[in-house]
Length: 305
Image (tube, one colour):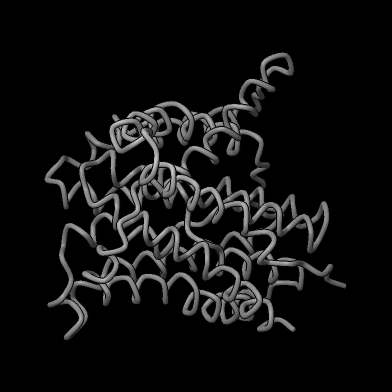
């Protein structure tokens, strides 16, 4: 039996940090130049540390849940394809700025790992937490690479060169290598990694709030609605169909459904801003996605009763 969850209460801390960053940047001496330095700190140190620790601590056992792994990869591939293809959709594509699409496409398929871990634990306990950790270890590397590819095209940078230099990709690959090698963070230094990871979430969300410009959302209304629809409406329906296709058991179905309706990743804003694209626009999408999670998560769970 599923445990009751207050989704608004679960998502309130993330939204509050975005709002706090917005207010601090607009109404104190800690204005944009300060937050640009924060973005660099988050991008080059804090988020890479978070990624490395999360992937290293996520058990990756492909044989134990091959059906769930296959369904998650199929869901991610469909979401990436839909997000990429928006500029070529008739009527809609003509109104989409290609550089803004390059920055924001990631919103359609990336997810908030920490909210997903919290939900899995509250709904299914240790079993759900274990499965969600495995999904994070598998999906995060793939989605990070998928997020960088359109940005390199939109910014005119070389894809392979950008992958080699991107700190998020480097941390992801390092985490995977250490994971498969059976390595772990020594107990005496793990609290340092944990504290840096916690700081990355708080500062990343506050930086998104500081960079928020609501006018950008109005200017890109068609692209915004399309990406948020992919993230919060279409993916839950696809997850429900894939769960049936792959014949997942109820706990596996629930984990896949949670992945499909999660708010997008807070690091989406920092990645777009640091790669020279429209960070304020992506910050707005991160904010809206966090708010929409209150609606999309109950909707997604209603599909599985």
